[in-house]
Structures are given as C-alpha cells and as structure tokens.
Image (cartoon, rainbow, N blue to C red; front, side, top):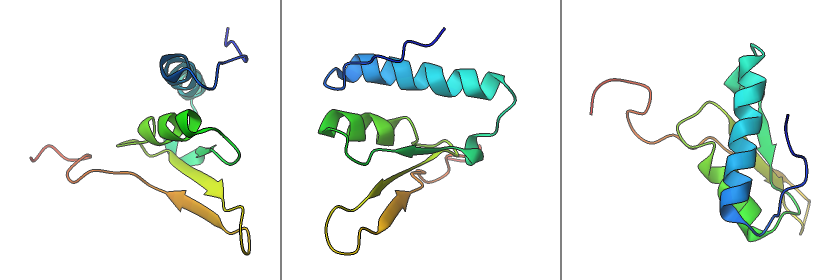
Length: 87
C-alpha cells in the first residue's frame, strides 16, 4: 500500500515514496518510458528527488515555467553509457 502523504521537505521520505511508487507501477507491467514526473509547483526538495529518481531510467521529469509563456520543460537524464555494458 502506498502512503499518499509525504513530507515534501523530507528528502529520504520523498525518495523512498517516489521510488516505491515507480516500482509498484512497473510491477503492474507498465513501461518506464510511459512515465513523466512533474515537479511544477513543488519545493526544491521535490524537484531534486524528481530528478534523481529519473537518472539512468527511461522515466523523464518535467516542470511548467511560471514566467513568460509557461512553457513545459522536460529532461531525460541519462549519463554516458548508462544503458550499455561498456564503461
């Protein structure tokens, strides 16, 4: 069972909760590339965790800019050689 009430200032609680949420969805035969973590309006801790749990996964994260034209900005955070066996 997922606990929907996370402390958005608590890095470890957010990391554990969001990781468990993703793992639960993936256990339901969902694909990583079908997910986008949105950190719009979140606090800094939320944005950091949203980015970290997407690194070297096929999950992307995004936010909507709050100034100008309110553009949607998304990131696909992959380090070099993340999906190969060569280093």
